[in-house]
Amino acid sequence: MLLFIADFGFDKSIEIQKTFNVYYFIVIGLGIISTLVRYTERSKQIKRQVLIFDVATILITLTILYTHFLGEDAHRHISFLYNDTWVKFAITLTFIREFSEQNINYKRTLFNPAQLFIISFFCIVIIGTLLLMLPKATHSGISFLDALFTSTSAVCVTGLIVVDTGSYFTTFGQSIILFLIQAGGIGILSVASYFSYFFKGGTSYESQLTLSDMTGSNKLSEVFSTLKRILIITFSIEFFTAIFIYFSLDKNMFRSFFEQAFFSIFHSVSAFCNAGFSTLPNSLYETGVKHNYVLQTIIIAAFVLGGLGFPIVVNIIKYLRYFFAKKLFYIVGKQQTHKPWVLNLNSRITLVTTTTLTCLGTLMYYCSEYNNTLAEHEGFGKFITALFGATTPRTAGFNNIDMTSLHFSTIMMIFLLMWIGASPASTGGGIKTNTFAIATLNFISLAKGKSKIEIFRREIAEVSVRRAFAVISLSLVVIGSGIIIVSIFDSDKKLLDIAFECFSAYSTVGLSLGITAQLSAFSKLVIIAIMFIGRVSMLTLLIAVFKKVKHKNYRYPVEEITIN
Image (cartoon, rainbow, N blue to C red):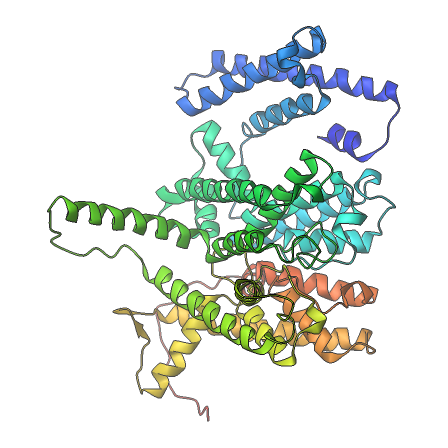
């Protein structure tokens, strides 16, 4: 992997490149031998999917080696494999296979899940920073602070930038950003753990406990099935989104198939992970795409699905299966004896809140911007642009209009949408839709004189209410502190612009009123800290810092405190 970094990141002479290639072939050969030896030594039964992967990998690798050693002209029907890129692909397959054989065990006595989660994000940010500083990652070099800012923004799937992604970074640099977005969106620990489980067929009890906290699984037996669903959903949606984006684009915008394909993949991953990064200078407010309503609709669908959260998407798929099965049974004449609770409470609250925010946001955006930023659009285009403008503040971060031209009332609405953000266990940030819903239901219950919160024939647990108000309070503390500190270091900036930047950073949105690149070094560090806290959440940081108190079997007398 260090050789990979040196190969991609630095300029080399032909002699050094040849030495690298020889070493690559040695590694590939050792990888094949290692896989074959593993089968002769392993006593327990090999899983079928592992066998299929190993056989496919060896066949692909041998075909690549066959093409390279016999030369491009030897077999013209596979001459496309006569390329160094395929050798590096074979190396990657070897790395995945060998890395997955390592024992990945999380010692809860050393780090609790919250600490492990935070450390993993911090390590990815630092690694990303160093990779972005490689000579071949940028066209003219980048400072450590700007590289740190970009890496944090990518890992925390925020989208705030201090340099233009498309023109400042090379294809290699953009690929690093793409990797950081993907790693930050689904979590590098989740991917590594699942690959280890996939190839080894098991894991330790401690690892399962830790991963259950990270994935939100109710049962230990569901940990890896949950991880599997997360990976399948993520890569499936990103794959199909990339295809749809590719065919929605004007081919005249690109010089080659590779450019168009890379653009599609980059924006697909960025959209689903709610990162908001774009290789275009002005995001989607660019000639050729700002009136491409099909492209905008595809991207809306991608970041809305990413913002719903993996458990919600899985539950919706489960409900759709039940729904169509029920319809099928009705057709053949069978009647149901009971109505199962398929769509759980989390999903119901999330869907209702998301739909309400989207509808109200679109309506308000449409009315306030009709003769302003929507003036250049007509008919259906106005609606799609308004829908995009109402959904992207909820942590997506793409913009299809000039943000500095927005009406003041629209900016205030965006503040609220950014603060609420996406849904729990999603790729988005903010206080989350369920938190906002619980807070709303709580004051309605208080107004009615009820002592508990009830909805959909269910009662909200007290711990959920306490957690919701803790998240709200901590978010306001972090954002407020950020605004004060940035206003001290950049006193020449407007308070509205600074507040917008801090809200956007905490909620990992990525929208800006145009001051990000102009901020001082200290202010950039503050924004970096806010982005990181917003992604891992302040509550998680507190859990990581404070030692957990053991439950004690006593209660003090209860007294009410005067509130108003």
